[in-house]
Each structure stands twice: as structure tokens, then as C-alpha cells.
Length: 276
Ligand code: SAM
Image (cartoon, rainbow, N blue to C red; front, top):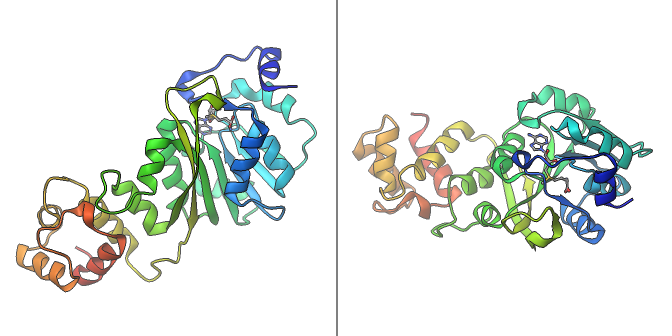
């Protein structure tokens, strides 16, 4: 049964507020799974199962799929479409409101890959929810709005570079895998999309003070028209002379703006300044 027939059969009404734009093109679904690097040994956490089209293709490729969906109106559609797939566990919950322990229990405590075609308004929160967690997440592959993909993967000193780019860079490495035109979704949304894969590297800054690094990174983008040193002295208990000396010790220009800094600059600075 194709996607539209399945939705009609169960009299499903789209909930726009939940960002429900579904994909039925099997070649595209398999391409997204290829981008994610999922293989037969992997447990996958899928967020936002929708009508289960991606879930179904994932079940053919992965060892196990734990698929989350917040909309209980999709229960009949999903149970019908995924009927008989024994390696799929459906969970009707809002992933943003779940504790790590609950997710770890559902995934039997094994490492997993996240794959998701997310509603645009939760993209950043959802990605950071997994990157910042203590869960054993090896990668996060997400379909996001094209502009968001550009922000996730931006280089320093470009307009797209921001706190979210650095937040991701602290915990992993993001790569844009493919552009996806709006026309492949049903219903067709107002924006184009792209698939981004983030390979986590939680040991990237092992032994460093990550909360302080994160706070410094946020400060770098607090007021974009101010110099970094101004933002720094305004946010932390640090005298101007000390801040300037720390910047000099890290090879950062005094007039530099936060948006020109690389994550390695922030890490060096965190070592010099220590916790403030
Ligand atoms: N994966 C399907 C596909 O590719 O066709 C559906 C993608 S659709 C863009 C996103 C889905 O995420 C919707 O079905 C929506 O109800 C669900 N969703 C939205 N917020 C969620 C949340 N916080 N937790 C779990 N699912 C969520």
C-alpha cells in the first residue's frame, strides 16, 4: 500500500503544528539511510516516525529500530504500515520530554545511531538533546531546513556561523550529505531541506572543562557587533586586562569578533581563563 492510500485508509488528518511532511520515495529514503552509515549491526533511534516510511526502510537495514512518534493519531497508520516487522519498537512519546535513562532502557543500553526527518522547529533542540546527553550516541543524521544545514556546517567568519555551529563542533563533526528539494515531501512544505550527519566525538576535548567551553562559545555570539573581549568582560567576572592578556596568550586578536573564532581558540582560552 502506498503512503496516500495508507493515510486515507486510517482517515489520518495532518497536524501542521507537528511539522508533518512525509517522504514516500524509497530511493530517497534509502539514500538517507546510506548517508547515516547504518548497517546490520546497528541499533537506530528514529525520531518522528510519521507514517513509518523511513522506519520501514531502516528495519530492512538495521539490527533494531526504536522509533518515537509524539502524535498518537498516527498509531493505527504505524501499526498497520509496520505490521510484522519484528525488529521495530514503536514508542509514542515526545523525545524532548524523555529522560536519558528511559531512552537507554528502550535501547538496551547499547550504542545507537539517531536518524530523523525532524519538524523544523525542534531541530536544534533535538540535535543538542542527543549531543549533550550521556547517552551512547555514535552519530546523528537529520533532515533539516537547508538554512539550518548551512548553520550546522558553517565555517568561522561566515554569516551562517553561530553558537549552534560551535555547540556541534565541541561534540562532533558535522557534514552536509545531500540537498533535498521540497517537492519530495507530502504535503509539500515551504522550504527546501538537506541531510546532515554529525559523527559524535565525545572525547574530542577530553579532560577539558566542557561546561565552561560551552559558556565561552555562547558568549562569542552574544552580541555580534561587539568585540569578543567586550562580550567576555560583560559576561564573566574577568578584568579587562586579564581578558586581553588571555586573548594575547591564545593568539586571538584584541579586536576579534566572536564569529571569527574557531572552537580550538575557545578551548585554548578556557585553559588560560579557567572557570570564572
Ligand atoms: N519520518 C517520517 C518521514 O520521513 O516521512 C515523518 C517525518 S515528519 C517531518 C516529523 C514527525 O515527527 C511527525 O510525524 C511529528 O508528529 C513527529 N514529531 C514532532 N515532534 C516530535 C517529538 N518531540 N518527539 C517525537 N516525534 C515528534
